Amino acid sequence: MSGKKNVRRKPILLALLVGLCGNATLATLSVSELAFSVFPIISLVLAAYMLYQEYLSSPMEGDTPVCALLSFLIGVFGYSAFLRTQFPEMGTNYLSVMITLVLVIWLAIKMGVAERPEPKVEAEK
Image (spheres, rainbow, N blue to C red):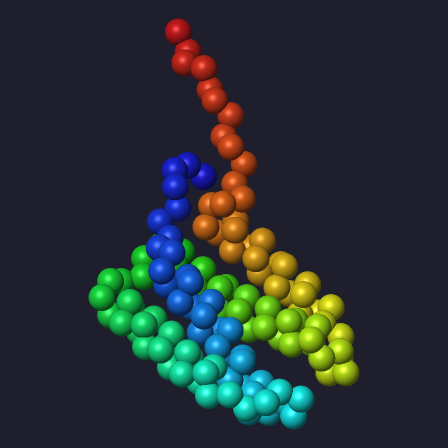
């Protein structure tokens, strides 16, 4: 693997926000321990709109779609783990934390953050 990966950062961050806000919206509508708030719904609409506009303005090339999906899932499982930490009576958060960690490691590898440096080869004379 040589060179830097061609992954754009803006769709990755927007997909993370859509995952977080989507799970927060579902949680506020379905979990009785949480008070209703309109802010997750507003932020979900705005983040999804911005992700759609980013998709229309420039094509997603390379590993960007896979990284965006991984980022979306990180947002979903990360908020689920946070929610279960905040309210332990909902159940354990072990599975959500483990899935989130695996997805973060996979995303780091896909984006080229966790690559090993290549050994320098001396020029042959």
